[in-house]
Length: 181
Image 1: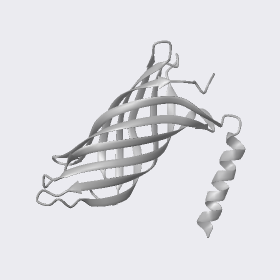
Image 2 (image 1 turned 135 degrees about the vertical axis):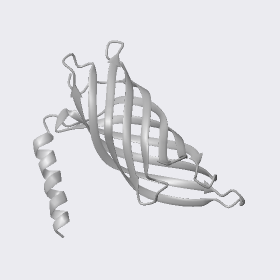
Image 3 (image 1 turned 135 degrees about the horizontal axis):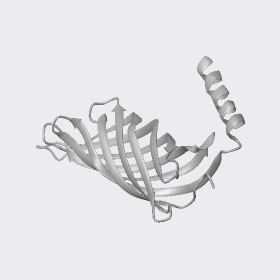
């Protein structure tokens, strides 16, 4: 029962302190490609679409929603397809001109894994809840701050070992609205 009071208190604090900067909007849309390293030679290529849809507490705290699809091979050589949705809160540090940002953050995701065994036509499905942490993130805004390049290293922790990975990604995004304007 205490956790319900804690969640209600955090939500009330967020709404009370963050109303000056809180805003729901479509701030940017980006596409990323990358590599998930699960174990030694168990890797997956993935494609991800992300959007920043809200600011919380300040214009530097963003709510990011994303969807992804990934393909790869398991340690035994069987094919794996991963389909996921993620929600993350990121904090951005800006350079003096506001054209480059370092960021970090964390969030949760849901990943559905489909395995195709080598000697069978039956697929095995698993759904897993993941915790995600951005270890290193960089954005560079170019073209009058309308386009951004993204580099990110993320730790993905899942209940099953196929869902846990060290993720590296690069991408390009389009800035639709700047929250600090």
